[in-house]
Image 1 (cartoon, rainbow, N blue to C red):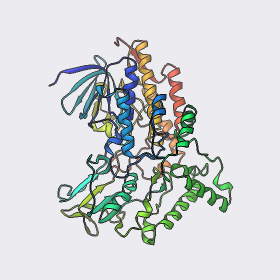
Image 2: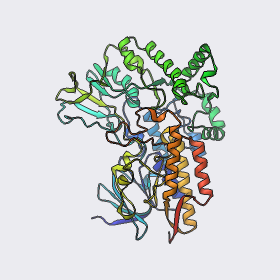
Image 3: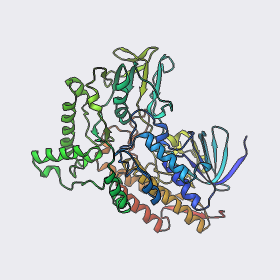
Image 4: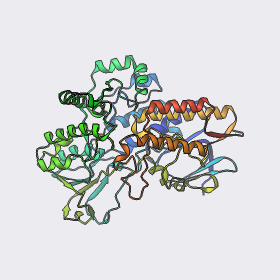
Length: 538
């Protein structure tokens, strides 16, 4: 066995969370080791290299704000940044702040166990590395554990298959190929137009249609960029006060949809449709408060889909049956129009599900389809998947998997009772995936960094979420989720895309401002709800 290397902190993951966590802890002169499965930084944007991969938050908002020089000197090229540009940005940050020396690449953490005798975490990797640290911080991401369906015959298929979340660096050439895409979530909606432009024929297998709004993407105008950068501090502050941490430059209506007539309602929907992206749901204040108000918005988008898709039967399949917004709204570039191409077909597998792969393609309950390439755009085991893939054990050897067998329990999405000195960045119970992830990440990292500084100042070596406080937070997050339409449909927010996963609404729906205020209050009250113990911390 390899020798145990002692450090102050182990950080798992070198995406946006892990990199900023490293930067903040190094400012405290702590010895930090980051462990990353990939061979470079970037996290989600390192793995998701599929054609068309793009952020659905505007680029001027989807970036770090801890360095004024960084945000002034970095220039984005498009309204919604594509994956290569975001990955280039992550690499630039790593170089600019000299982060790579503290990152161990091509190592995957397999276990982390808490030693109660010394209040240390023992972290091991798949390469046999062993680290002992006072703190273990999980920056593993909310959408990083790929969900590959358990189809029979994966090894029988003679062609090549890929998952959008683990795309090969060298890319995939679809030229002249018969291609299948399984799934119609965000990664499928982004990749399908690009694949269709290359493939001889593309067949899309859809179980559940999703709502998607056009991005209206394009190059960023120099005048617009200069304006934002001239008032970046105020712009960032305004965004932090938005429910999701972004979108402050757009008006969020305070008007009820029930208070206007048909013509005014249609005009407002048209205006917000033209804005693109998530702004569509800001057309009226109460679109997410009831099925009655939501139906107006859903019907408007269904009408748009029917106008964009020539074939009536295909358009009908593409019109979602559920309400709009209970699943993550997708943002697209020419997605629906792609089905007008003569080389694109849509197959519904809702009533005739895929049975498995054969030597030549896919088999549904109705027939076999032959392909050269199969792309699984089947999403992720969101929020908990990456954490539960590791063997994490806390006090008395209790495992995180057992602790979360009935759903994830955390205090503020930051800590789990029974797992002292273990922090989770954007964990379940925090706004995370319902917000601008970079803003949520920065808020979490700042809070954790301040907490560790407080512990060092007061010679604490032990922090643990108290059980009563954790239970109260879980109850609160469930109560506010139940006041919304979010839990009403089978989404990955509830883990409904993973067979056997307990269905619990995982993110905090109360909004980033309310959440950040709560975190600040907890800290000001001496980290209320957290138990701290003294000892010697170097």
